[in-house]
Length: 199
Image 1: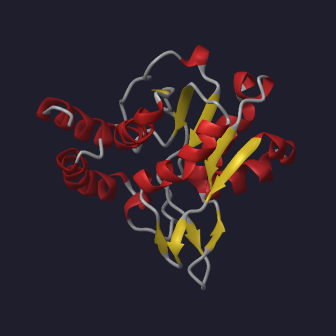
Image 2: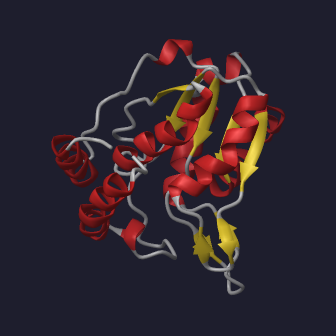
């Protein structure tokens, strides 16, 4: 379990978006991209990626190291949708499109997303994994992924994502619509996840 001081630090980063880069990016040989918010259709299924996920996908599509090395991409459904819109040629790099919904209108949490990705990451022999996530989500997403993949001795790093995307007022979910909504939730969710040993 992380220390109380680190819990407080991560709550602060979730509110101010100032979390720095984690680890050394140069050795990365796999990507896990976690979506932030979604746009649901009337049936409760994902209908569009949303503005935040479009910017996460743009970061991946335009990153020379990611594209030139052809490293495997495990990406949540909305990020896959957005990446294919931006550059259909990325399809050959996608090792896994991770479902967002466990049932219509109800999304998997970050830990469950990482658990879905683990088998593929192992099969692709990923040794150093870069977690791509919205800057305000990274304080919880990065240690969550670290905890899930630690049994396979996968190193987790994460680039500084400041200035990549913003909260989406058109999101179907309430918390990703604004920073205030997000901060209120993370003040509870991060300590809870620490207590449960999820981060």
